[in-house]
Image (cartoon, rainbow, N blue to C red; front, side, top):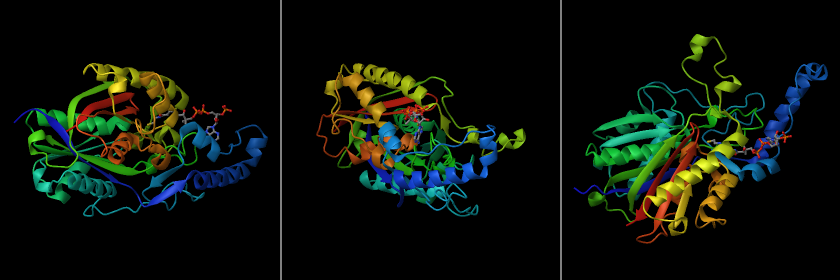
Length: 374
Ligand code: COA
């Protein structure tokens, strides 16, 4: 069998519930009023600061986000709760994350014209798994009836591309024949809905891709993986400290530092040049320049980041056709953003067109794949 590895299917599961910026801000501002009222004396005495309002205009201008999807809307906008309400399921029931992973996986399998019996490895790669073990990937493997092996991996915002990299390598090594990579980004439980700086950033989604050898691919839209490239550089500027250690540390396991938090402006400044350099180096490997790339399926955290990165690469603004944006509708979906962009915008490419999938974020981490339509 040749070593040519392909992406032969992509699937996106989108939650039925959504929250607009206006709904989110109305809830946050009502929570602020209640907080400032409850803490009136301490605020007047200068002991604590009053909480400022959030604004839908700021959110759209600073990030490009207009709305986000959420797995369970109940609770997230309730000012007495400010977190989604998700039922606790017994050990013998399908877990929430496996449920959304399965939904995306089935769509990717169908796009790839594959049955579960064709697949022999499952990777669940995302920013958070809802438990440490048994792996969500093994639960999905069982639910689909897949023979072979499965494992979870966490690489924050780059989990989807890093997962595809591992699939590519497993296929090259001959350790698997067809790999399902799933990104169930159930991020809403980790959002601090009482934090003005970050309450608007994330949305839930699940994406999946099928990777296999070119010889076995029989889908309508198949992409040769020309190469993969990854880099990481340690930074605490995007961080979540939630974890099993909190039980031994006698701290609030849900305190603000245990939830997603970031130094957004620093991240913006650090990651944009890193991502632009990474992408130019990656396409240079193939003697390609930015103008040779038909489509950029970039990470979807902030529209201004994508605009800047494209400008650095192309020397001009990219059109929406060259670098599609999905974050206006989906918000930042951790690692799944570039896969959503790919899933919704790839069928019009013609044989020979080259595109680049790239994610970037916490770690810091950057992962990319240069792919070519078959
Ligand atoms: N509503 C109104 N004002 C707000 C606000 C909100 N929700 N959030 C912050 N502000 C205020 C700030 O307090 C600040 O006020 P000041 O100038 O009086 O101090 C001002 O708006 C600007 O805040 P800043 O945080 O500097 O905004 P920004 O332009 O950097 O945009 C992000 C914030 C988060 C959208 C942006 O930095 C970003 O997206 N960075 C990249 C993050 C990223 O990609 N992370 C990866 C995660 S996977």
